Amino acid sequence: MIISDTAIKRPVLTVVAMVILVVFGIFALSKLEVDEFPAIDAPVVTVLVPYPGAAPDQVERDVVEPLEEQFTALSGIDKVQSTSVDGFATITAIFLCAGICRPPSSTRSSRSSTRTHGRSSPWSSRPRPSPLPS
Image (cartoon, rainbow, N blue to C red; front, side):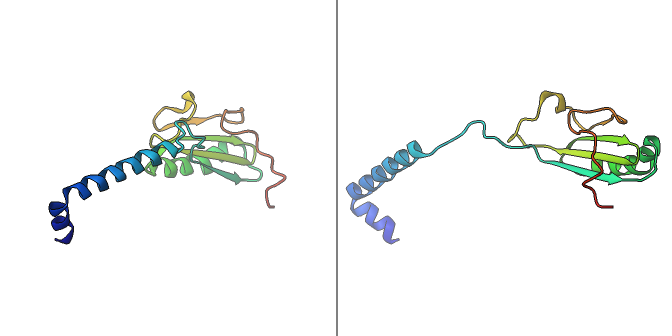
């Protein structure tokens, strides 16, 4: 009640206070730095699975397919991509960006799954087993 009573009794004070707030807001807005296209990396999860002594087909059947099913069941997944090579599997899950990042145009498909079976792909390279723990 005190604020409304003061605003009614002193309208000039109310108008001046509003003008000061608007001028301060315009000044603050002019100093605000906005980047229309910030550098944001797409949220990506990569799972590396060693499976010693297994052929690529066995790695795909025993490791890749069950993991891909689990990844595609998650909400917010845009794309799941996997690579199966001798004794090793790489599974990459790319999450939706919700309009804040722009992945390359080749990844804009919805819930697609690609298996490359040892060929190079744009999202992964041939794994180097040496840095992996044995």
